[in-house]
Length: 104
Image (cartoon, rainbow, N blue to C red; front, side, top):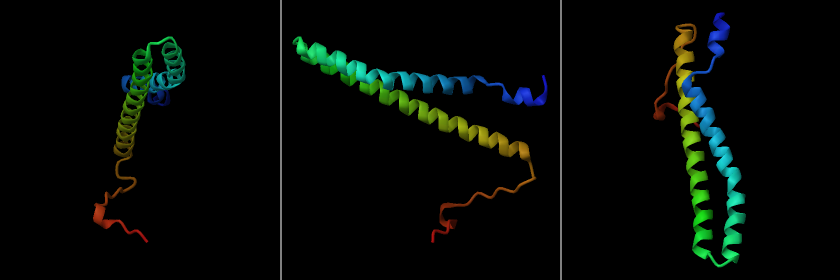
């Protein structure tokens, strides 16, 4: 394999982030289905079960989106750090403290 191909291969952390995003998308897409199923259950008299089904689906979707977002940001920061460390002294990157920003 050439160097270009080796750099383009996905590691396990990339696959985990992609899996988290796919799971989050599936759970968000399942919320309307759970709402409809909960509505049917409530029409047949199972009020608490219908509300629990809808509430659980919303909580699961929110949790999956948060996990996917946090892991994606973490993975992106790791990739940027690796990219900066590979470039070496070609470009100098200076980290500013919060008091050194100039907002005008």
